[in-house]
Image (cartoon, rainbow, N blue to C red; front, side):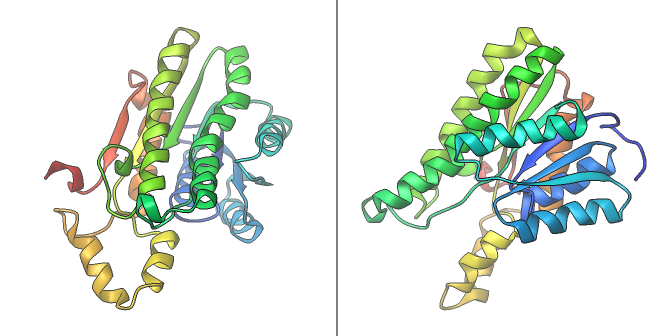
Length: 256
């Protein structure tokens, strides 16, 4: 892979076994970064790492459940052991539960919060001390437009992603003077494996897909590669003056 905007950098990307996380890992590697591919699913994670290697990039797969403190601490330690530094943390791993508030089980609520919000906290908790020692670092958290506006039938997901945006702003303020930037991605509806699973559960998958596409004024869902491009902007020197922001990439969904 040719040198690029992330030449000499190391990036840790969670949820990198599919969808947005995979696209971020692939793009960052193509731009010269060594990439720690973190995912709870070995099949997906190993596939992404192999794709990077096949393209001439430098990657390692790390099995981790981001909602567990021990796993989060270990994924950072293994990244440092392999690459010797950690410049970029992309907390991308996430799950979703389709339910309104009174029909959301306590177990589903807790699981969503554990992965989508606590997982971001733990990633930051264990990565930041190393960034402080380096004197610089960049954190990019995958939130969602669902953390900014209400989305039907996604009570726990909306709450968790709003928390991610709040945590992002707090970290940006707390560590700005130490050279650490922290921003969030706010994607709209993205055509990903998760969306595929949701559609497969519908009585009319094609009809539901058309409704999802129509939510965006641009008339389609986003592509994982488009979200990855936004992540590259935030994590490279192109975004050197950007911190504490939520970058909306939603095809106009929130402009209505």
